Length: 454
Image 1: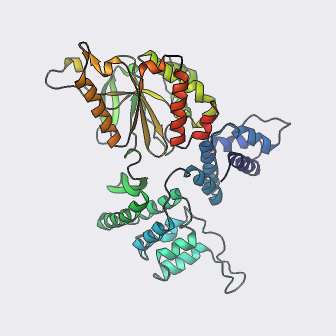
Image 2: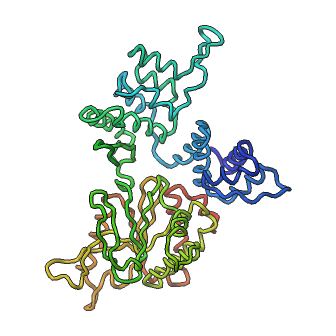
Image 3: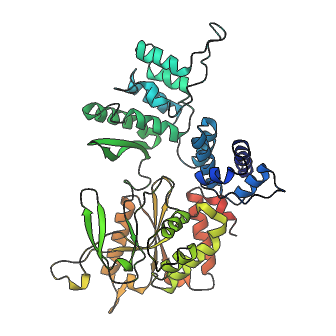
């Protein structure tokens, strides 16, 4: 197994080899790390090593993956992807061969197979013709074109997968290969839908499926996802950290789901950037905050933390929030997931106290939300007496309403965890928070970073 030290050494050597001291900070920025300032007494390798020394295992793997993608280094990108996939189900060679057979001899429909494959696999090196003649300069791309375009049927997709290494590559890369083959530029309409159904029947054995996540020119774009794990769809609007009256929200463009705050815009925050496959990190939230065009705000990380803290309604919530950063801010560094408070889940435009003809939507806001890699959404609730009682005392209807809402969230893929408010205000509160998050990080492959918080 690749150790964290192995990953750090590989990243340091890659930075040393590919960048001068002057260029190293820019390369680091492109892959999401901050390279320490130049010091005449430090070698480039040591400078790079110190820059990644505190990163978590997952963050190291992401940097390695991004370094490979940035430079077109297939093996380097694969090393990072392999580590990122350590805790998730793999797509077996058996399934991959069955997938290849589903395509027959046509991977790419209306496009050349070279166009689909060359963005993912190295095709430019000389093909092995040692069994024929020495010195042949034809590439694998040439061979694919020869045997699948000029002479269709020479190679079927099973042979193609063997030649490009698709049976042994990372699940991420294999998934992107399938996504490319299903792109509307390759096939669309009934042909696309029929092939997706055939592929999904095979992928199901390993716990995966191809699901539509977007449209292009009216045609679906598919993505490989884990079945049942994670929440379907991509986050589009995060409305959170309310500190005043409920904002009045309308649609700037209802077809695109583009929203606009019509009133009380200063009472909440709206994160409107795309959420990447790695979830939403604290560093990304800070970067978004630093670029808001609001003259009155403190644009620093401390300023954002203060603004979020103001939205918290109880001592239990405040202790959970501050303890989270105390324990993990340094040890998780760039990989720290954003702990987002008071996030609107169901948004009822009406003010509940003014309603007469219907009930208001239950659980309009979540106490905290974490957006983790692979479409994982974790909800944290801090329960005071109001969650299970009313003015008359204990209330079974109120409690039933709460657990029904939990079931609804879990069924669509959210993880829901509840804390009793009294757990978070006593002398053992820090230990309770640490035990929970250490377990959560292990569950989601961030465990080695959390160990440093002990």
